[in-house]
Length: 332
Image (cartoon, rainbow, N blue to C red; front, side, top):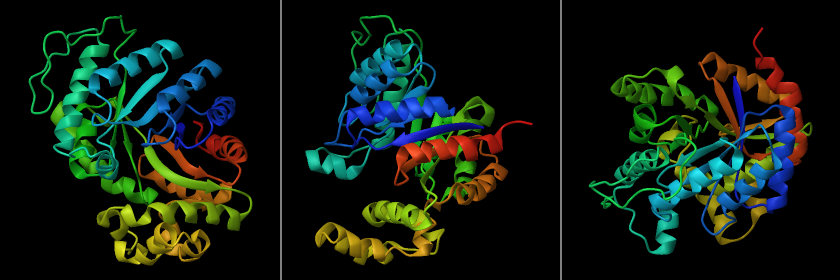
């Protein structure tokens, strides 16, 4: 079993350095940082993390080819891989449509844009010409890196929709499917396998991370409050398909959205998050976490990725997962 941590890009850079060192000491395999708009820059954060660690792999979750040109993504990828000594993984996807609207960008052909970007970036980090004549990318023969990439940088595709999940199996080295709830893995896997069949590969040929939200603490109430904040903020934007698995709908989140985003009453919004909604992630003690992770392992999961909020004390959560949870999945 492989284990990784995922972070939003909303913290001071020095915090990520501390967390990455703790994650490396605890035995985690990967450390991912998002690149959401108007927050701190993931490439800068990951550069600091690369300089402060030795073994743990680092990754972006995710960069998108709308706000960053694929040529620049390839530059970031090859440079971060060089800086980290071959430890960088490029997480890429189409990004949030809301972000594009903020910038006045048209959100057209997102899947084609991502797939063409992946093909071009693979060529560029393989030290090949990235010239393309696609539906979106139309590059001349001058599209090549002017320095030598140490290797073709592995690409992980972020996905939630069926077609993007298929694309993980078809073109990516790994996948970052968001699982709300964690047991959604059972629904995700058939789409990934369909893409694998198209590419003539097997599931063992890619690194498919089961990306979950969790909040770990010995104080159950504190753990639930942290996860409730996350759900209150994002719940209204989740897909209807994902919510239906828990017997929920977007309408259930309308009053929560109003309380948080319009009225600015976060405490009231948190109180409206129900136990049923909390099933979107995992909140509680390490024993609670372990119980649901064993169910994931029974579904065939080989990589569990723990995402925010992680817990009221992130360092304590990293230590608890490393000491109490991860050893339970060690090979006999």
